[in-house]
Length: 271
Ligand SMILES: NC(=O)c1ccc[n+]([C@@H]2O[C@H](COP(=O)([O-])OP(=O)(O)OC[C@H]3O[C@@H](n4cnc5c(N)ncnc54)[C@H](O)[C@@H]3O)[C@@H](O)[C@H]2O)c1
Image (tube, rainbow, N blue to C red; front, side):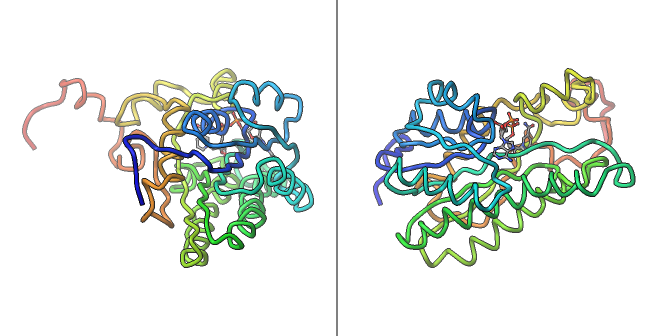
């Protein structure tokens, strides 16, 4: 294997779900910048043409990742445009209702699980079949800090994202000896349309989140794209089955709310 001073995806064919917005769009843009040929997949058919222009993708396919038939159609369509699929980034996802379990309908709970977990499973399965045939490929799924620990009001999303982590590890074990690596990123709060709508509706207090985050700020979409492209690339050639927190230290932090005092030097000295 030869590796240059920067990641080089020349000749690699990538499918990015959720590619019309946020983390998916930014990762698609970076994949293109690093030489890959990219197809975007998204439920939002209206936004796809503009997203193709913004990212420099080769084309797009639209449909619901929670539907087996739509996934088969999207993967076949992407493979036809690209001539095959070597890389898959599964970013399509929806948020939760932010209500406790007893107030959420089972139908809505299942829909959140269907998009975030079943959608990831179906895409891995369909694109993975092509990768198994060619005995080569890399997949990065998107979990969340909400999949690592419990967040009240997000039972469907949390279960789905925890499931994405477990699915990632299982697939890494099943496909490792077939030349396919499967990893996931677990982002913390990232400035995307999904998070912006929560902030606009004052569902989150950004200051509390910043204080709870050791790096003291939200993530930018580009920081998720860097991690995803690293894991998709040969620079991560011996990494599989990992769920990488990309979270500014969120998952490392176990204290209560006193971190701000320490960070600003206002804490007392000694133990
Ligand atoms: N933004 C964050 O803070 C954050 C944190 C942790 C994890 N995540 C995860 O990152 C991923 C991307 O989130 P984002 O913030 O970029 O969101 P976003 O809303 O900006 O983008 C998500 C994209 O997925 C598409 N999509 C939604 N449902 C779909 C479906 N059923 N089929 C196909 N496409 C569908 C949407 O149309 C949209 O274009 C999601 O899986 C999300 O759960 C986000």
